[in-house]
Image 1 (cartoon, rainbow, N blue to C red):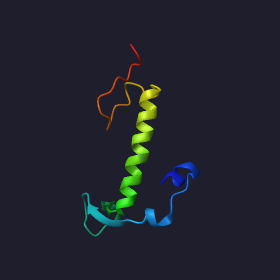
Image 2: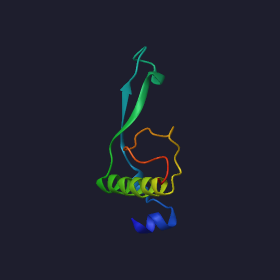
Image 3: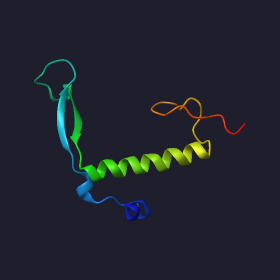
Length: 83
């Protein structure tokens, strides 16, 4: 995992997922009315994703890089800087 983070390369085996088409709306025989959902990922891939997310969000929070308008999918944190 550390090697991937240092080199910026992710092994191909970690990029494999089972994709399931999920119906949105409209005619069911139209390909464009389905969206792909990656439902089954290798466990290591999930761990890797969580590690990258944790490191990135910690850095962005520590440096106050994200603006107050960028709050989606984040825990409530002090986004206005120290003090």
